[in-house]
Length: 344
Image 1: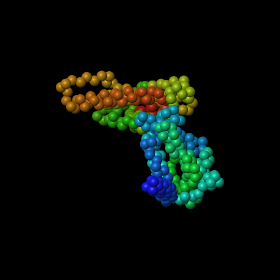
Image 2 (image 1 turned 30 degrees about the vertical axis):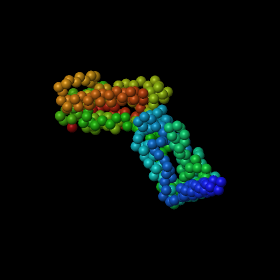
Image 3 (image 1 turned 120 degrees about the vertical axis):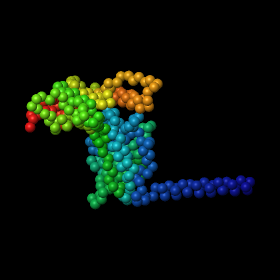
Image 4 (image 1 turned 120 degrees about the horizontal axis):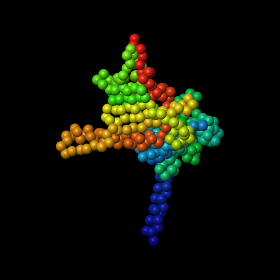
C-alpha cells in the first residue's frame, strides 16, 4: 500500500511539473521579442486562398493546378511573380514593438474591419478553413512601419512592424497580363489585309513596295514587333455580357519560323478595342523512321511539342476576350499605306 501511495504522489508531482513546464514554455513562446516574424508559423505551401480587402477594393486569389487564379476575373490566371511577392511580404513582416490592445486603440490605428485606412487579409487552407486573419492599419507619423493585429488572436494585441508591407487589393495587381512575347527574329511572315512582310537575309521586308515609295521605318518597327510583349488591359470570358455581340474582324496573321503562328482579330465598341487571338501549327502529322539521326528525331520531337503547345494555347485563349490599349490596337490595324512613304 505504501508503495502504491508513493507512486501516486510521484505521478501527481510529475503532472504538476508537466503543466508548469507547458505554461512556462508557452509564456516564453508568446513573449514579445523585437525583430520576430509577425507570421512565424506561416507555411506558404498550405495557402489555398488569399483574400485582400482595402476600402472598395477587394481581390480573391485561389490556388489552381499550376498557379493561383483571380476570382474577380472569372478565374483568369494570376501572375506567379505577383503572388510570390505578396507572400514574401507577409513572411518578411518583422515586429518592432508591442503597442497595446483595446477597441479604442483599434479604431484609432485603423485596425477594425472595413475601416478606410484598413487592409484586411485572410489566408485559408485547402479545406477552406482560416489559417490567418489579420489587419494592417495606419503608419506612425515618424516611422516606416505599420500597425497590425491578428483578428484570430483573442487578446487583440496591436504591434508595430519594422516596415510597411506591400499588400495590393486590386485584381489588376495580380492578373497575368502577358498574352504572348515573340521575338521578331522568330517571325517568318506577317500577313495583313493588303500586305505581306517576309523574312529574308536582310530581315523582315515589306513585299510589293510601289515605285517611288519606301518602307516607313517607325511603322515597320511597330508591325515587326506586334507580338513582342503583347499585353491586355482587361479580360472577359467570351460569353460575358460585357462583350456579348462583338463582331471580330481578322486583322493579322503572324507565321513563325518553326511552323507555328498566331491569328489576331479585333472588334470595337465605343472607344474600346477588343482582341481575340488564336494559334495554329502548319505541321499536322510527323512520321518517324528507324534510320533517322538523333538530330532529326530531336527536331521532330520539338515540332510535336510546339504543336501540343499551340493546342493548349487555343484551348485556353479561346475562352477569353481581351480589351487592349489604343497603342496595341493601332499596331494591329496598320495597312500597307501606313507602312510606306514617298522616297526622300
